[in-house]
Image (cartoon, rainbow, N blue to C red; front, side, top):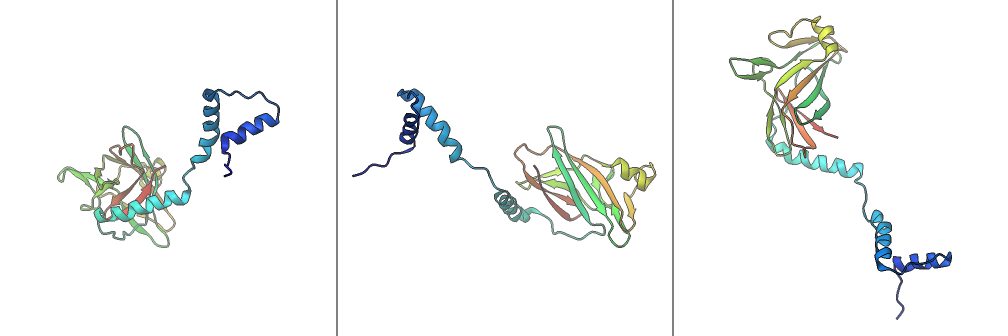
Length: 197
């Protein structure tokens, strides 16, 4: 019966063919073989696998999402940054072909929470369907000067967008858990999923 020689034997043959001294100590040969073998055993996660994991999360998480409603102003999550102090979501509202109203969250003392257009809620959802309530909302400096002329946000939070205009705001929430990689922003009934890098 012929025995196939594995990786250590082929390495030994290679060293001998070049006339190199071969250490026969198992303490040196085993770490060398493992260092050459192990990098080939592991592989990087592909973009397709990442996308599949995100899709799987969104499929499972839809059970805790409210029914998605369409708002007058189309919305997009531009970025999500989470650190030990806060999670900052940069949100953009834009008008396509016609003027639309965008409502920025306003803190209502009487309700004791942030509301959108007097009744809509805003919060983040993580992978376990936990809610993270809004702590602060700030228009970006450019949007503040372009739309409000440096003035304060109107009491009702209404911003009128003309066709082709966009308004950006930074929404501040409590920090998400370190292991959180995906989630969703719920903005006045709209569900905006996101993946963190």
